Image 1: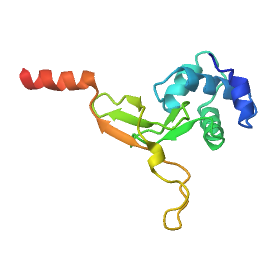
Image 2 (image 1 turned 60 degrees about the vertical axis):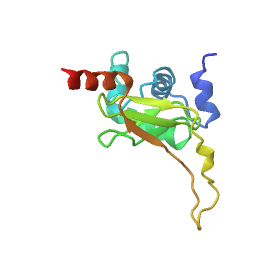
Image 3 (image 1 turned 90 degrees about the vertical axis):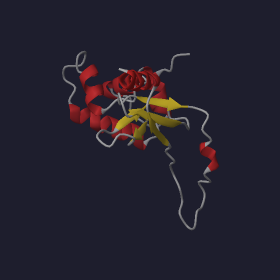
Image 4 (image 1 turned 180 degrees about the vertical axis):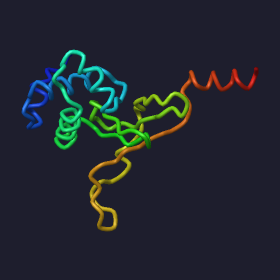
Length: 143
């Protein structure tokens, strides 16, 4: 069932401007965990007045209101995810693609109190090689 982006934003207290709807729609329909540059590059083709600053500001609002996740899995780029349900991420050290990893028990971390610390967010990242990159590595070793 497709998500109505305007309603999705309004339910999270976000004013659904044209730019916010476009960015959120992109995140909900492309599961590549894009960077600001990737989002801007793809959306500016159909929205020539869109600025990179607007994309940054929009993503900040989306993250602050729980409509998107900000991922720091990649040391070089901040990435964004429209899937806000608890899940882990995997980054391939070969190709750099980020994948969702379902089935990880993130609830195992009690978020209420740890020695006076209140945990508000948990992010779990795995790093390694995807199947395609594993095959490339194996082929290089064989050759």
